[in-house]
Image (cartoon, rainbow over all chains, first blue to last red):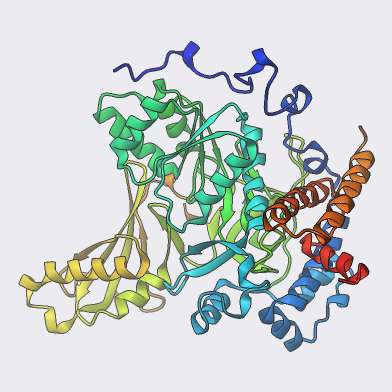
Amino acid sequence: MNYFASDNERAPSGVAPSTTDGLSLLGKRARESKFWNEYTETLPRDQLDALHLQRLQAMVDYAYQRSPFYRKKFDACGLKPGDIQSLEDFKRKVPITDKSEFIELQLEAPPYGPTLALPSEFVAHHCETSGTTGKPLAIPYTAYDTVRYGESWVYGYWGLGIRPSDTFYFAFGWGNFAGFWSAYWGARRLGCRVISGGGLDTKGHIQAIMRMRPTVLISTPTFALRMAAVGAEMGIDLAQSSIKYTYHAGEPGPTALPAMRAAIEKAWGAKSGELLGIAEIDAMAPGCPNGDGVHVNEMNVFAWSMNPDTGAEVAEGEVGENIVTTYSNTAQPLLNYRSHDLVRHRMSCSCGRTWVKLDGSVLGRSDFMMTVRGTNVYQTAVENLIGEMPEVSNSYELVLTNEDGNDVMTIRFEPSTAFADKTELWSDIEKRLSDHIHEGLHVRLRATAVAPGSMPRYELKTKRIVDQRPKQFRRALDR
Amino acid sequence: MKRETYIASIAEARAKLQELLQDCDSPQIETMLRNADMELHWALWNLGVTVPLRPEEEYGRSAQRAGK
């Protein structure tokens, strides 16, 4: 079987295959546009801000009228919808919210508790995300929300050069993960062909790509590298495949890590893009065509940057925590929501977009979150689960390494006193700890027992995270 | 065509759709009309028009005006 497409066999991007009979999904003028929506993507800042104010006022009113959660929260601080007369009012008066509040309320009355703003028949799609306590956050979307959410991806697709004539391959087991469902909603919106890799293993994905000749790969960035490595073992050079674009989300990718971009683009012979999304918010920041950051989709999200220690707004160019309000999740509104992403806002970009740019995407986290195999892993969640294992002492550390481009987390621990000299039981404890973490967080971490007394002791704050990854595989603030 | 012309024409189309929605007795056709209106609402949103967050908020007002 000839797995390799020659260059002239690749479907040319931006050219409809059916031009000979006059049929195409977009007209000539629209097809030649540099932007998905030039009007809004280049709207001057004063007009964007005026639009935000009107929409935020509507959002506050909507949340107050429809969400029992927000009604109670606003009443508790004496806020009425009419109180918001400026963007400053919105930033200062609307209480900051956090994922943990929503999770607690959802646990009391599953699945959504008082956070739902619409009758349940409006909920057309359900996703979940990991939480700081290891309990998932349930995310409802209306059908309209999925359209709005998917649209965010299209700005990035279009900017990279992807057109309706392209074919997407999703190298992903779908599950309840919002990231790739929304990428699919975006591909549908753009009008592209979609091929789902579903539950195939890595070799199966590679064979499917070689057989069906898609032009766009959607995957986590580390899985793109993993596929390239497995392809090489199979004698297949994926740089010679039909793939012309790779697009990523779920963990730091080609925008946050230039070394990652170089590795993926070389391995696939393709142009790589990245989107910053927050499952419960939106696919909120599609990649800048310049490749050095992402632009907040200001039609779907209002974002500002806060000093996480003081709560004060930080100036343009300074690092702060991204605080976001979504217009696209109308089932479960989220206003002034802590993303815990540390970012640097810029208000201009040479690409021509006026939407806020986040230099280098996410530079770090304010809440000790790491991403392992595309799953967000919170230090607190891991520590809570370790604490539930009486066989494990309080002397442990979480060691981060990188293998073949994949972040790996290993729990190094000293067994508790009762098991200190029963070395024959240590491998069983390792397995049970790994299983316990897997059961709680749905991600497999390695566990390694070490001799009691061999781990470092700290007088002040215990250092739990040991980051042994090469610098090029760490976010800017983690280096 | 100017942006203002698009906005006016889309608003006009939505008004027509809302008339049809108010008297619709077919779940299939009503669903289709609602989907069409949702797309037009989204088009207005992305033309930078201030519209309510969801089109249903306007249906309520139209229905009240029509005495339904």
